[in-house]
Length: 385
Length: 65
Image 1 (cartoon, chains in turn green, orange):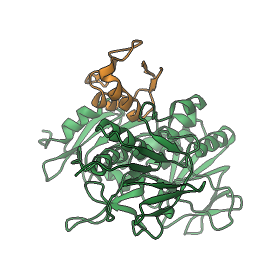
Image 2 (tube, helix red, strand yellow):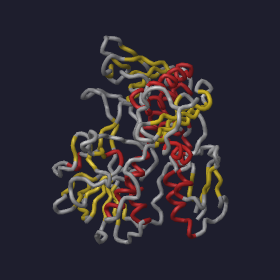
Image 3 (cartoon, chains in turn red, brown):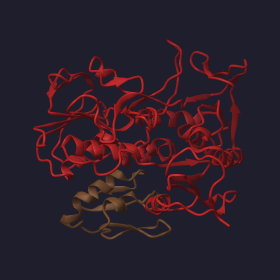
Image 4 (cartoon, one colour):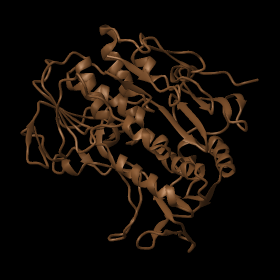
């Protein structure tokens, strides 16, 4: 297959900028256009729920550089795509043609506010983070809806500032993602750090207009100065209406980041991995997947074999003053296969062996390079004596 | 082109060392060594160094010039 005459990347995201960079790394010299709606340009999101909430100086360090890449950047949202004529239309009225298209428009924060209900706070963009940081400066109490990675990071930022914070979810902190063993340890640690957890029997709704609390299904109503919704994300696919590329889960891709439409590839939080006979459709909107898929989509757009799998299971979080890094499949069922160190001290290296001969390696409060964790995860480990 | 490291921010993820092994290395305790600290990055390492700056998940790396 010959290289395409032009490549268009839509979405100035981590996946989108990684794809652009990888197109050039692979030696593609044809025209590359990047359409992005972010007025700040591309930036790194993981720090938004961590250092950015503590330190305004961090705002200036987030940019993802596109220097030296010879890319035509259009800072206007994509509003429509025509995959037959191979064009994308932007909000400022431009029509951009392509031979290969990489969709990397990411996701919006999921919102819970009722129609017309004001004052919902979410955390997805740099502007969201700045607003939340300003609210943290004078909040006397806080509620976080959602006990996933993002919710626990926001709760940790509240507790670190001495703001009493309550986290509400139907499952215990990080239980859906990490399993019972780590969830128990983290829940205990979070409580000692000043994070109260309330387990709801069903979906919480926002109370007040502007929002001033949450209503739980059992009739309990909690109020706070600050209420933050951390209830997941919704893929940005509105601009793909009529193309057949997207459904409720986002843009379906295979291991090569190919969609069901010829010449169209996708990467990052906008995607889900299409199921096959062996497994169901699966969204995996994680940072490491955005990087892996950005590279894979670039290779596929050029007709080259993918550089590696379109999925890269590396996760990390900062919760209750502790950094947790994980390489390998999730969730982690049952007790760990091996444990070095002590979880109570917040310094431990844990592994879970899987039947397929791989493992999941967890550095719990321990400095460990990802390469060392990857090496551990690639092997099946004997149970500790 | 020079690249700086904010060591206070570095969490030892080690993705820079995967991207640009000729520029960054990590020891077993995830302590980072920058082989061209304060110096010009040689031409053959520039593309990899830019990729390393972009893949740092805590934005601890900066292109200075």
